[in-house]
Length: 493
Image (tube, rainbow, N blue to C red; front, side):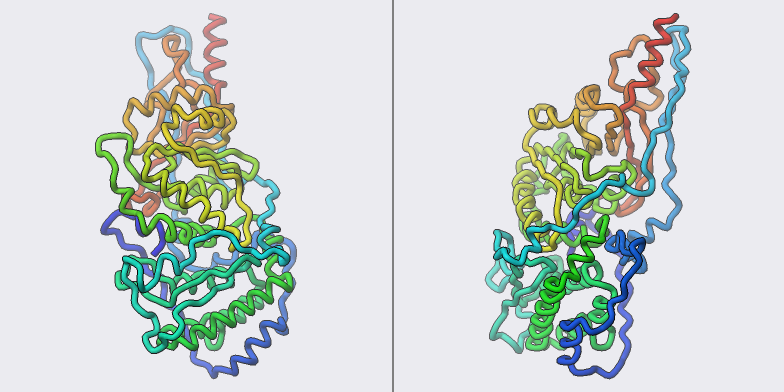
């Protein structure tokens, strides 16, 4: 179960994946298959540079997923908050031409970013660092009850799994949960292998391992279905040897070095692993909030967050700030997906505790996957009073405020801080900070509303944790041009 399934509104049902199509063919000797991959004897076609660039972002486009279904829909309607006429004001014309809020609706700001972590791929380093292994949260002696995944093979229940980098292997117990909502180690192994094959290996290697009749992934599924623990462990050991060989040969590094951005599926895999090992065992603490206050917990889901990064043009050299960052999911996603300097501030103590658990585990996970991330800064307390947040806000390029449950008083107090933002900074919120019908007049020249150019956008279903329904969000861009034009016109009059 992914972390967004845990925080999704109760009663909602995810769209099931399409069944795998399995062809029946003669299965050849596993020894020959293993030797062929390790020797890399099958041809690995050399792709043109134009096709190699962004390979990680492009490989999964052929799959029918919920995210792609949403992308194929009609583009969300954009509507500007327009001013209504206002009586009893100065006779000076206030029809200041409005500049359209410029958004990056296609590609993220083009900035060079090194995705591959040199440290994680260093063969000379032992690669041992603190992390939460799957065996730490899923074992027969854990409070959440587990049972043997392979009842006929009780001898050795632990197994090691190799990730794409040169870092340590992860330990898994071969167990399965009694409750369907609990962490599933065998699913985690399978999904880790599938993502590695799709995004870290050359096309020929990937096709070889994914072959429907005798590929390694097919044999892993077959061993699990047959409850054959010995065969399952044998396949995992073969996987470890094959991935290690591909890394030493430089095949994995070549793929990462030719990659310009990460696909959402890989991002979600890392975020899900992090969440499952830190937040999920303690998720009940997030329900302990005070109704009727600003301290209500809710999450924006990764697909929605990724769209926000895209339309705002957030890039590696930018500064991102999440005000009310919860357990830190969006802060971590920005650091991974974009590689930017990423800040968050949260006032709820339980959420802060979980965020502090997520950050080091997230960094360990990124190291396992061999990826670099931007600087992460998680702060505790009231974001209106936090000194470090107040210092970084004037440098911010994109600010996210999930103000869905904020009181009007808190929204007003926060809006006054926007006067200190730099020109062009974009504030993303679920409620507009500028009242509908607002216009600049001689009596409200000092209002922060006058420097915000607001654009309303739509998000579709399955974008937030508290409802499946679609809704609106707002991008307010700091733009003082309208206020300056009004002031100049007023002075001339």
